[in-house]
Length: 537
View 1 (cartoon, rainbow, N blue to C red):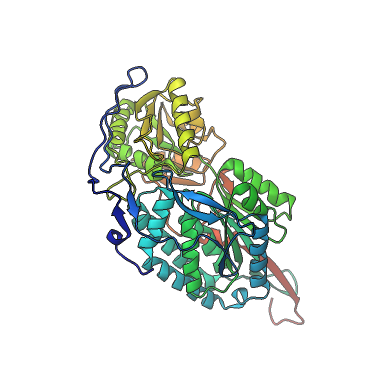
View 2 (cartoon, one colour):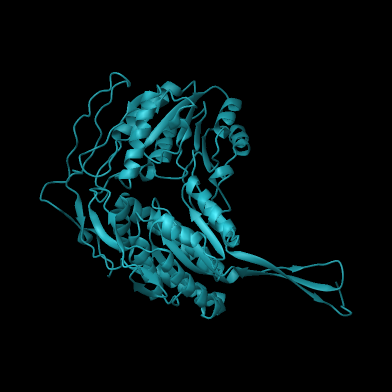
């Protein structure tokens, strides 16, 4: 499908105007300070209908779209309504076996690892160009299947996917080993070699971003791959993988299996002919994946898992700027971010002002149909996540936190939740300890740096942290003290292609993106050759 303007890809499903606002949701006199209405310019019960044809719902194995061996399919749903978008082939262990066999043949007998690195890079560059050309179609699929705002997908995420593939395409012909001086008459060199067949398991919150984080470096290093999509969001990966083959990717190099974790995911993680595994998802599932990998062929595993990231606002902060940044750090992508700044820790001297302004900002957040322009927040991914978030909100209320805004569903269809803010949150409350993965901001106060460092680190997670301060010494102190993989100073969610990303503690192992992402897909081999009467050593 040729690239077209958004106006040709989406249309209103009724003649009613999309510019309307929902009324007040009342006041929580028992628990809160009084909750005002939320701004919603789109009638979320009358969703915009994307005018795009779903062409690829099968599995992609050995360069061909094929049905699952069982013939089974499963529905992928529109988070705005809960309605079925399409029925997708349901892969299981037999399909994983077929995909791994295709990837193995492509690596052992096919041209991919034998192409020059420059030739591999040219294919990846051509794919990036095609992806950029089809941004509107890809962003439409991503929004329809996931619920994220179209503008976010089209203007932020897809350009980052394109950039990631160009970044790793540029690396393909710059991967090399070293000549190592040895104590004796030997010539020593190191080679950086691909693992072979890689298994890649991506999540539903950023389907294509994580696709690029894994497929990009895996293929640039000369590996072949079997990609398992999240069952909630299979459509965009199938579409862009077809574009990859149009760019000249040989059959079998990239195979895509849609299916469920306990079947397709487990089969891939435990497969004896998969040489390397990379998984992004929850910490609980990461433990299962790691166990399956170790019990099979002890394949190395890269894990990017959950988080409960602190966002620390120091006493010297510009409160207005800090409120806006903390709001974005938590609510971006409907709060469905592994690195969301979900523990907002504010110095006691500015705490009350911060809470009032954070509440006001949440009440202004624009929630509605993600295809409507100007929308900041769409629906949650599915009914399971929707109910889980509401359960945590009830827990916050019952445990004694002050509900400042939100706390309920929005509209009567789909999985929309009001932007929710809690104050007076204590560290032993579930909303302060667990990864909620939703639009729920928990605000606590602290007295000094020693206290906030101890509290920020008192978690099993260690993915990221945010620090908002005008004092360089304070920033340096916190940067080194926080036990996390990324610290953002006076910014948040900066995901440049060259910046490594990964966690400490139970937030994962290994790194993705940047030069460090390459090492996850390469093995180092030492080659030692005797020298006879060398002129020099």
